[in-house]
Length: 169
Image (cartoon, rainbow, N blue to C red; front, top):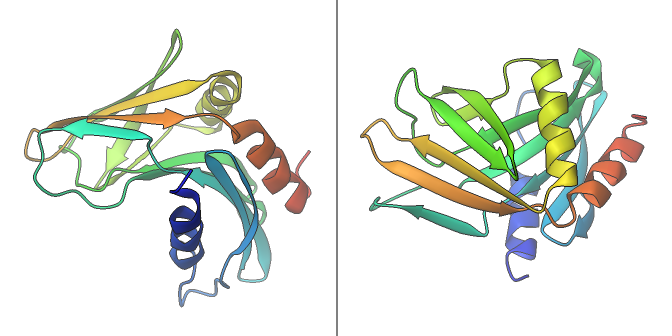
C-alpha cells in the first residue's frame, strides 16, 4: 500500500517531542499497520498505528487522522487505544466504533478519542485483532458527520511485534 511509507515517517515524527521522548524507531510494517518503539523519560514505549483506508464526510478541510494502540510501561498502561480525528469533536459527543457486530463508544476531548478504561481498551483491541474492517463515526464541532474505515489487516502481527519489543506478554 502506498500509504505505508508516509505513515511510517509520520509516526516517527509524531513521538519526537521535547518532553524527554526520543525519536521512535520503526519495528516493521505489517500490511496496513506499522509498529514502533521509543522511550519516554528512559522507559520503553511501543505502539502500532494505522490510517483510514477510506474517509467520508461533508468537510472542506481535515487534518491527519489515525488510530494508535500504545504500551507505556512506566505508567503500566498496556494496549491503550487512541484516535486522532483531524478535527475538533463536538463537545460532549462520543465516537462510535463498529467492528463486525461489536459496537464501542469512545469519549472525546478536542480532536482525540479514547476508550473509557483499561477493560474497554482490552475489549476493543480483542475485537480489532479478530476483525477485518473497523468503521469509526464522529461529529465535528461544526456538526459535520464523518465515517472513517480502517483495514485491520496486519494488526495482530503489528501488535505482537510492539508487545515483544516492550516485553509485554
